[in-house]
Image (cartoon, rainbow, N blue to C red; front, side, top):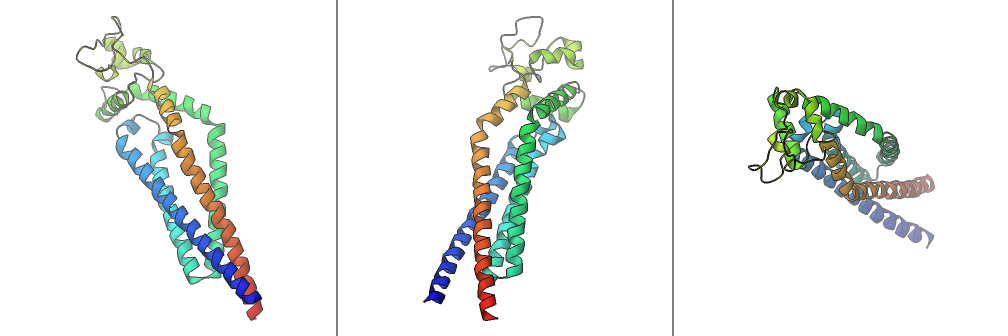
Amino acid sequence: MKEKEVTNWERVIRICLWLAILLYWISGVVLMCIGVSIQVKFHDTFLVLNEAVSGVPMIITVIGTLIILISTFGAVALLKCNLKMMRLFTGILLALLITEIIAGAVVCIYREKLHQTLLRDVLRTLDKYNRELHITKGVDSLQRQFQCCGAENYTDWLNTTFGFLSSSVPRSCCKVPVESCVTDLSKYTIGINQQGCVLKLKNWVEEHMAVFGGVGIFIGLAQLTGILFCCLLLKILKENYESIE
């Protein structure tokens, strides 16, 4: 009777672990899709941003791919019922969970510093406008997509070579319709977007924070449940092997 109860309990743990691995795999696919979609949508825009920010979509894609590979490894370990592979899978999940918690804490602590660094880098990039083709294309794309002008506000253009020589802003600063827009800063600026692009980017991230936070919580829960059920299954398997010996 006792042996049957243990067997049933082991079966329940295995099913729960399969579900946890499946959820973890799905979260990896979701992350990878988010990373790729951001890269495709804002490809030109990332030319303006510093390397720390522009590399975020690539990091998201890589993490998503890594999660898919790890969950596949976990599925193979569970299928083979290999103790060493199960221990390794549990260790990887635990290490990733700790790393994610530390990374999240670091981002929260240094987010203001990151904002200031991004602001400084965008201002430096604006000064290359109309001199480097890829920068010009990236700035125009950023300002059109986010309906913004400059880094902090539209007056940033006065401190650039382009603004100093022309006393104006690029036409990508214009509100719709562009045809009736006056870009000369010595005249009316009513047709020009007033807010800077760094603030608009910050607002965009905050608007989508629920999505990013939801995915993060989903991944964390999948990892926690995976670790829990892996530990329970390892305990059961160890007891089974000891009873056989």
